[in-house]
Length: 434
Image 1 (cartoon, helix red, strand yellow):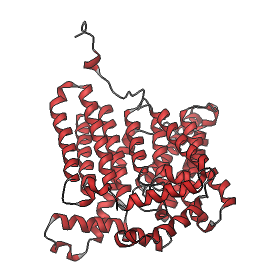
Image 2 (cartoon, one colour):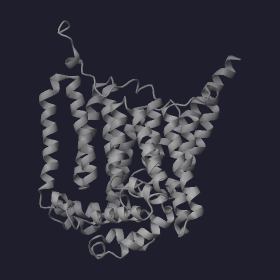
Image 3 (cartoon, helix red, strand yellow):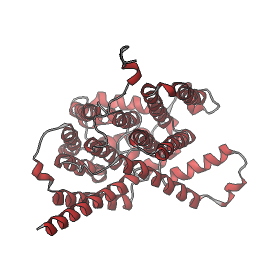
Image 4 (cartoon, one colour):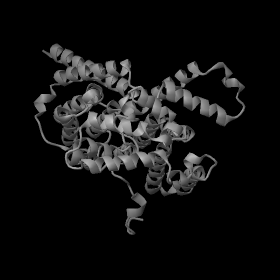
């Protein structure tokens, strides 16, 4: 009898760790373009989840409505809306592609409703980000052309690297959001680790990831990384006033670097880049116009993509300046056919119902993570990114759902505990205890 119990426990452990490995492989794939590897990663993730769910007998815990399941419900609602509105599409030619991209809503929604595993640790995800970065750097090294060494300035070399990365591996938006999440994870690892060596390594990785984001020249990513770094520094200052001077210096340096870029010679980082004539401004204006045409009922996801493609291809400024976007549109890639704002896109596609659905998803995440600084930072990164991008764009649906799943599994993790947004030990200390 005891032997059977031990064997059952061993089987459960093997199934749990198999699911953890499959999840981490999928997590590592987030920064890269959607590919056959991503598809296989999703299949293994869902199969391993079912095996883990059955072997651990989690269904015996019953079904209780909690914050994680509410988030999962609103994930499911996204794919339900796509299905319902597909019957009323006037231009349905992109429906099959959109179903493929957004099917992750269905899978991750069901997984979240059934209940995620509590066997995950922050450390697993933090160190997995390093694997992705190493794979990215090795891949870049392998595709660097022979004439690269003839370039004389660092700016020229960085420009070539960024171009090769964008054409072959990933967009700067996706890698930057991934690095920002990595910063938040290593910040949490710093607070829970008992090893000084691991604490020091976590600080090193935060600095390295921040530097990589700054080198990418992605404006939203730089903003996100600076928000994360600022929150990390302020949290450390509040927790330990001995760190006040060095951390304030670090905070000032980080914000000065961002300010410098706004007045640098690179026009895309100047404040004036937001003025009239900026491509994103035209795209957002057209997005608002599209909403005005059908604000109540929307037009459907495929029809919206088709109409937006036509609008973008007829704009002379975009034809002249946005060659990469035009290439995607001419190749009929759906992730170029959007208003660069997720709230706006949901409203265009599904009308008032779509606006409610996307806002409800965001609000449900806020309500779920409100007690955790780490999870708040991850959500802020996602939300800020989606104000200038969409789920089918830089943050693919698979990537977005994986980030939401990351939030849910960390909520279930014992390591997160009852983490507070700040721990003002020296601020809240009463005079009698001082």
